[in-house]
Image (cartoon, rainbow, N blue to C red; front, side):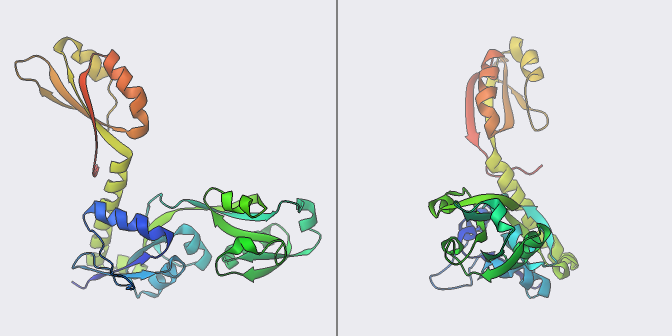
Length: 283
């Protein structure tokens, strides 16, 4: 079988994707000043800007890759989305100088600075603005107020916009990193299988990050009430203790539930409670 050709984005997305591969069992080795990381002998990987990933997949020169859904929508690329990784969450927002009121934006031909030309044009047109778009190549927030009346840009916290004297007037799109594939690759049974297996491993890692294992001992007389009150993915794992003195119980729970669950377990009679992280969760 030919190698699976995969695109990994450079910039802010790279670190999270690299960590995801490592936790899935495929550490990435990337020498300085190279664009060809080594991952596995059946993967042919290349580093590219996230803006280019969708188009390259649609062209069929690569099989799968990672990019923000914002760049897929911006390019209009026809790709198959396999998994929302939930990483690198950003909002695409419209922002204007703090001193500029909303009403005045409709009375002029405003200059809108953005890297998201297509997303910006669709939004501005739908809102009835008269506009001229200035394509930027990074550092969009420096354009107002001298060179632009508005910017359409991505932000995670909004702090950089505030620091540059801007206020958000609308959220246009919410984005996160997606694992996507070309339609040609998904039409090839062998490539489709490899891509879907990768997606399964990535999801197992993400689900594992979200959960912990709780292990505890339960006296025999408290066991019926304990089992009735236990949360679990399905049924808890139960094993008898040596000497017939009770049971050892394991449950996988979401991390954000732990502060409520542990006190409840104590009230139900659990002792020797141990919490530990999970590496992967495969339903």
